[in-house]
Image 1 (cartoon, helix red, strand yellow):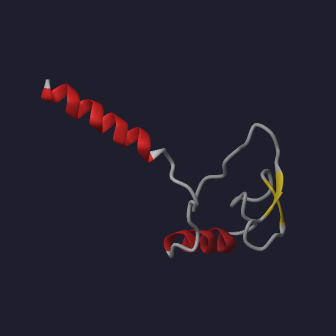
Image 2 (image 1 turned 180 degrees about the vertical axis):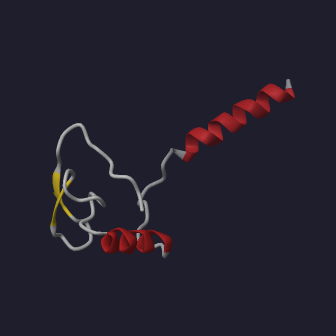
Length: 75
């Protein structure tokens, strides 16, 4: 389905789903051991089983920028 990605350095890890050993040079679905595990991971993301625990950015910075822009447009 997808072309094999080549990494500059061979990597050996454990599949994040089933913990089976994986190899970046041998496993087409690396870091997963198989297409099945890759699709299970995708399903976990789409069903919102995985969440990012903290915001990607500090919302107070955004609020400060919005205030600065509002002040500049008022002048």
